[in-house]
Image (cartoon, rainbow, N blue to C red; front, top):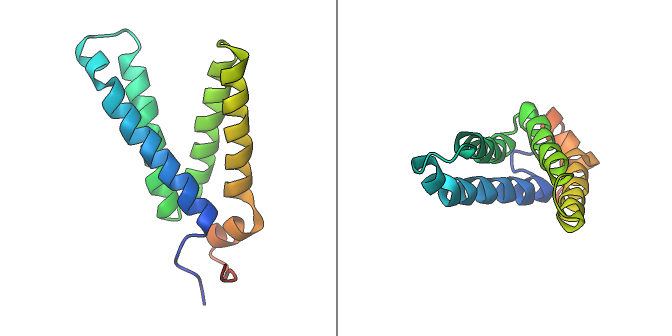
Length: 117
């Protein structure tokens, strides 16, 4: 029998992506109206994060890779900021890689049966 409920690591990461994406979009929305030069890019980045969250919960394999690309982008941007920000993004990146590519999660995305947690 194929497990239809996402493993807990997917639920946690998808929830974080949805939270960051939706709240980030709302937070930066006034900058869009103020015609901030980076507003469109920021909003697209936030929408991409929310899209990752939805895709992960819908068991879409592309969503794992998009989620990885999204956090790697943030790690790259953090290279231009204080070292603390880079450390936080790198730590989140490591956590996300583990959560989205551990054995239980990989089995679930491949449609294989997983053991109950």
